[in-house]
Amino acid sequence: MVADLVERFVTTAPRPALGLATGGTMEPVFAELVRRHREHGLSFARVRAYLLDEYLGLDREDPCAYRNAIRRLLARHVDLGAGAVHGPDTHAADLDAECDRYERELRAAPIGLQLLGIGSNGHIAFNEPGSPLDSTTRVVALRGQTRAENARFFPAAQAVPTRAITQGIATIGAANQLVMVACGEHKADSVARALEGPVTSEVPASAIQLHPNVTVVLDRSAAASRAR
Ligand code: GLP
Image (cartoon, rainbow, N blue to C red; front, side, top):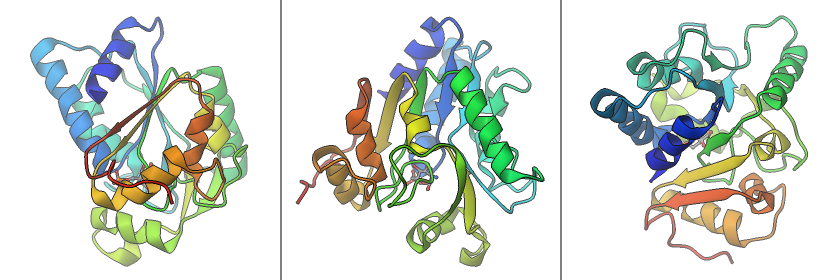
């Protein structure tokens, strides 16, 4: 279903600007897009892709950097043009200025379809609970729970960075269409709070309720809770 939405977008938008999330949830999505490219010629040649967030403090070639994960799981297997994957420069001398530059780039793009996961604490991108609903691209500190959940992608738990650059909640909301995906029972509570609870900065993903064009794709386990 998610690949269908992406395929329809990249084949019909005049200049497709595609917002990419990372994380385990997106891996089968990217694998299916690669399959469609190989077997059916689905082309990404016109696509500009934009990262949702990125860790700070990793070497440029670190395989755990989201830019490199996108390259490994998607970009190198399809016909995305050279330089078609955009993101913040985490090695910029002035990170606040770099966040402002990326925010301007995103607003000028603008994103047509934004893929989103959700953290089990209700975060979207790296907007942790307490992130203002009007936040823009900025440097953030990662919560212990988020670092622990993402440790499975790193050689050791201590290797998970403590900071990241993330698109803000308002930045994400400026995309034309949002597609949120969640799988597994560990996501069920945050999904229920995001979709059925109040819109609150304590559940950053609840901000999607304010967006006019959202698709949420859940497996049965992630759909199993009700907001309390
Ligand atoms: C990370 C990413 C988020 C992603 C979340 C869920 O924290 N920054 O963008 O939505 O993980 O990840 P997973 O799909 O691995 O559960």
